[in-house]
Length: 104
Image 1 (cartoon, rainbow, N blue to C red):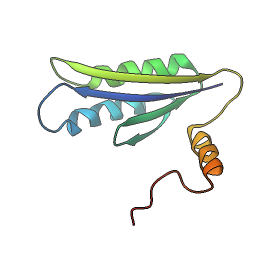
Image 2: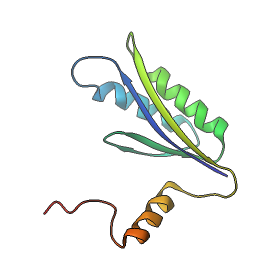
Image 3: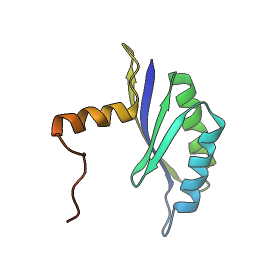
Image 4: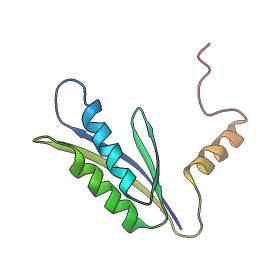
């Protein structure tokens, strides 16, 4: 089984949130998860939902602030294991090219 999630944790503040977001990302290192951060959030992969939820809770709690906004979207594929990069690869095969625009 593979559980893939998109996580976004941020304090509700004016100005840069980078330092607080970095705390949330660093908190993931204490768990048996793989992750990749992108401009809109962090994709997390875990073998079990319990490990994923523990990592998400730690990331949420790592952010300081009077108000913290957390978005979590979970894909709990229960019939077989599939990694996040395999999902992107499947879309790229269907497109016949990389799944991004050419800047030129």
